[in-house]
Image 1: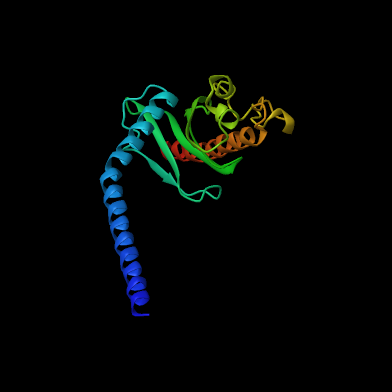
Image 2: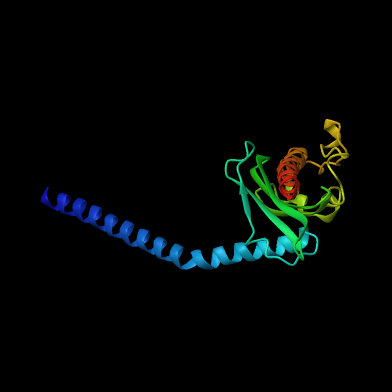
Length: 198
């Protein structure tokens, strides 16, 4: 009987040691990789800003504006672009959790009149080969150079002008929803910029 108790307590002690070592190792690895992950994420944002904004001379990352929105859990990130102190456009991070597999996060660049310059996919978890085609030029080009004031970005099934991705209508709808959300926030920001000049 005493041998069983000794074995049982040895197993518990061994499991505790393994758990402690594993936890410390994971924490250590997380601390080591936190800096490089943040740096890589920032570099992706800077690259995306260069792709979606008109030519600019300021540092949009330093000029970031965080705006509260009813349509987003967190604040919406807005990156104003200036060329020689003249506002030329804004990049807005639009997101939705209504993708087929959840979160879709986009960076949409708007010229100052509200026309979409470009869209870059920042995050998505869609089905490979179907929903992931949202990154393809053929799909994204449908949004480029469009002003949502006169262009309906809903998919054609819903009465809009966007050709949905084959087999990924839910993803296409979510993509358009994220773009619309960004446009709505852009309009509010634009109104504030115009009013502040008066």
